[in-house]
Amino acid sequence: MARKCAALLVAFTPCVVMISHAEAADTPISIISDHIRRQGYPCDEPRQAEHDRQASKPNEAVWILRCGNIEYRVTLIPDMAARVELVK
Image (cartoon, rainbow, N blue to C red; front, side, top):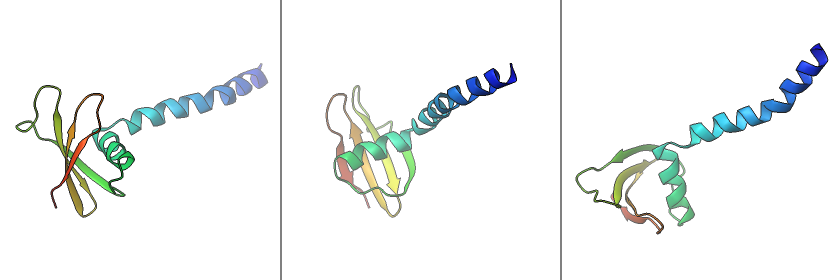
């Protein structure tokens, strides 16, 4: 019985680790930095993502993303590439 439980635990451990890792990766910092990296913008050290509520519009969320010593204003529009502006 102990062997069956141990085998079952080992079999399900990778799934649990993958789920918890996926949840940890879904933060505004990781989502936005991944998005702009895919568009060719450097962001090796994402540090902070701040939602700019005043600049945002319906279906256009604006975020200030700080990556190392670079700062971007990122406008996220559903089903389109992000609009990325260099701030600093």
